[in-house]
Length: 213
Image (cartoon, rainbow, N blue to C red):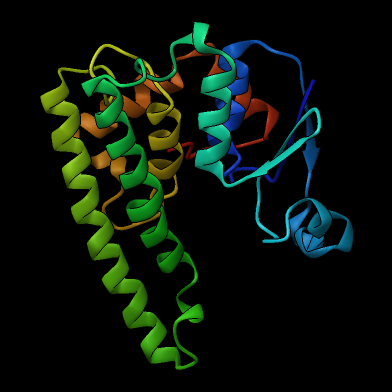
């Protein structure tokens, strides 16, 4: 049985959705950020970064969301969560996963934690504003990519790791001035994803409430 350490709506959301899609046995273990449980000695023994999520798979202890998602795809090839190894489609899959985790997700972290880059209040406000602008450009590119893929998913007809990952990150923009849902193709993508029973179960288990995206 897998064990997924989580906090509602955090970066655990993508692997949690994949676990539900797979229909495998797993256990959710809450890491309560409101009492700094992610900084506790017990959690840091599992994940020395103090970040969420962490996945336990037998003797394997794995952190970093993208790594967890790739591991689940590899452990369950029958689910088809990634294109075949060595194919052009697999290369494109890697490209967009790296874009989501290394570019969009990194910029979202800057947006949510601008104080990490400056101690000056005025400067942090400017950092946040510039991050939101850059995020907007990234969402525009993803919206265009969904249009060009022919949909309904980022790789076109194939549902992959990319789609829960994109839903998670696009959800994080829901309180911005121009959230992902305001873009034609991203908005449709979000609604298609929210209609999937596995994703509905995931959101319910994490206690997520409106606005969902």
